[in-house]
Image (cartoon, rainbow, N blue to C red; front, top):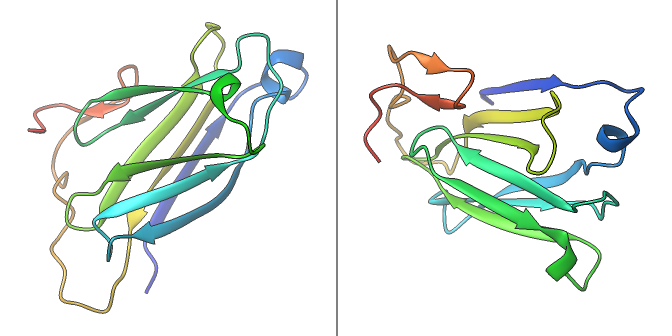
Length: 132
């Protein structure tokens, strides 16, 4: 069984937002302990996205200007295979959002989502009360 949530927002008529990247691939790494995310090459004035991990509250700026291959790959640690990440435009105050949440299955017995019952702060893109 596959469990996941996608949340998207933005303006398809905003040229800055239409130039931001799409996720090409998301896959399990290190037997579900990490989520590997591959983003397509993108063209923006600042060429930076901010990745926010909702479980830890950590933020990471992804700067494509430093990439040579044309694609950008990032890895984040999961919480027992669970992930909840948001990508927002790091340089502009627009409403661009790409949020992906779910569980990586590895065929082993797993635990329930550690964020069950916690409130999600849509501004900070993190769970209130979640310990890193």
